[in-house]
Amino acid sequence: MRLHVHRWGQGPRVVLVHGAVLGGREAWRAQRPLIERWTLLAPDRPGHGQSPPARQDFEPEAALIADQLLDEPSHLVGLSYGAIVSMYAAALRPENVLSLTVVEPPSTGVARGVPAVDEYAAAVRALVESDVDPVEGLRRFFPLAGVPVEVPDEPHETLLKGMRQLLGARSPDEAEPPLHALRDAAFPVLVVSGGHSEVQEIICDTIARETGAARAVCRGRDHLVPEAPGFNEVLDRFLDRKPDGRLKTETCSS
Image: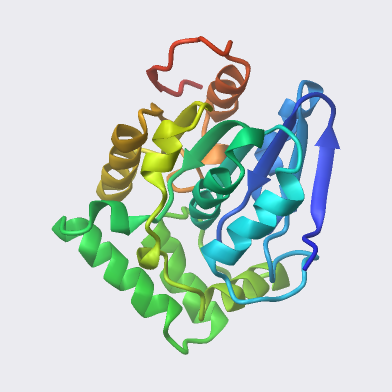
């Protein structure tokens, strides 16, 4: 399978891996100001946008990203389910990863045993394994994930297509991200959350601790962190850091 890739800008490569429902073009619209300094490559994950259909599954998708988009040195940024994909992909091709940015992955397995995390994991699994129609699925998924958008009575076909892809997906609670491999890799890691969810803060704090990553919180758009005020500035600084630059914790500002 060949993934369709949207490409914008010029400069060092930044691969942007989207999450559920929206494809590469829609999920990263807020990052267009970065094209003056960076080449943004936003693949459509299988079944999204213009890429061929396949079951949503983080492991085979990670292999596709590693083979097709980490064929040369690149920064790697993943959002939500795409952040799980990106962690696996970075471990498959570490020699070509310049940096890894992980944004609110639903990687509940990293904090299994914490009641709030286990409850969230069960709710996500129940949704993706249900036979609910796509409109009702969107209405359940958006508040569960923390998407601050009201679902209209007749959603755009892009949303319906993305929701159909999510229903029947491999549940994210099955992921066991290669955190030790990421810690041992030569590239720096940044973990970003939106400050809206106790569960996401626990997951992101755990990943940052286990990988030695920098940590940022960008409030204002809940799970749609790339749209939050200050996110682009935090990401730009991280991508542009010197190889021996110190990683730090910071809060986004508008």
